[in-house]
Amino acid sequence: MCNIVVLIPSLCPDERLTALVKSLFSLDFEHIIIIDDGSGDSYENIFRELYQLGCVVETHEKNLGKGAALKTGIRKAIELFGEGNAYITADGDGQHLLGDIRKVADALEKNPDSLILGTRRFDTPCVPWKSRLGNRFTSLFFRLTCGISCADTQTGLRGIPNSLEKFALEVEGERYEYEMNFLSDAAGNVEFIPVPIETVYEDGNRKSHFRPIADSARVYGRFLRFAGASLVGALADLSLFYLLFHMIPLPRTGAVFIAIALARICSGIINFLLNRYWSFNSRKPVGGQVVRYGILFLCQMAASAVLVSLLSWAFLPEMAAKIIVDICLFFASYIIQKNWVFGKGR
Image 1: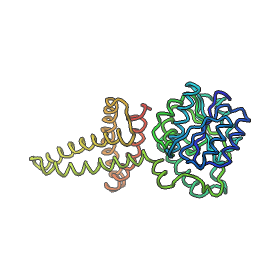
Image 2: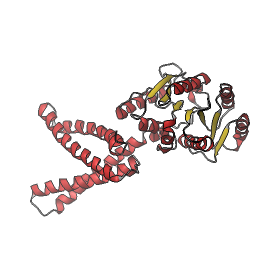
Image 3: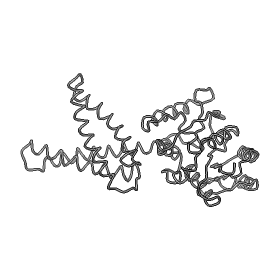
Image 4: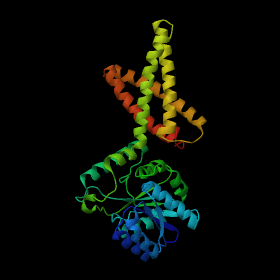
């Protein structure tokens, strides 16, 4: 399989990684890149043995994260083998079995333009309840925000086609959030093909380097930043309205109208800048984004007015109707901004 590069990020490995590499070479995987993500001097012998077996070994002096390690591996593959490589990403801690890696590689060779996802089952007794609950939530979140079903969003066993080689280097994120961002950005641009694999959680997954709070915040980082930007925009809107209303020397009705309009415009500008540079970290031309954001901004205001009026006229109190409509529009706005305003026009 000379056209496929196997990437294995590794932090503090044991003999299982060496055994996996030997088995991969026996199955004719010719190009294996191991990324030592800051394991330290005490693991030097293991990585030296992997190098002697025929692996390319890249070393981070300190731990930079799984996303950074995968990008390092891809850059090294391009340096050694040129552009246009396909990749298998796998873990070396025993979670990904040799037969499953081979299944993903075979699927990638048969579907060279698709993203292959080794998909685990989470309804088996061996799965810790936290992992089961977390996967169900991320799968639901992914479906709601991307419109695509993905049963295992956190799988580390993936087959990446050569068409996504440069794309993989551009995806935001250096740690565990990279894998979710990769799927989110790829959704709609490439076909996802799930391949069933064994679900392996040894010793309750105690050796996992995943930090539940810090890394979960990173995984949902875009959405949390978007929520923060929305909160800042709302506070700016209220504060500016209060100040302008008391500063404008007009009768009450006129002052209210002008204060609302100016406050909404200013808060919209603040929200746009926060989402462009913070929530979605976009560096694309600003002109088109301003136009798309303006269209969304006007449509959202119109939709809010119409829907609140309809619901309150039909059966709901005005405040309840506004809360329901604003929550729905908040999620809709996130999806549209991610995919259209600041995305690739999907």
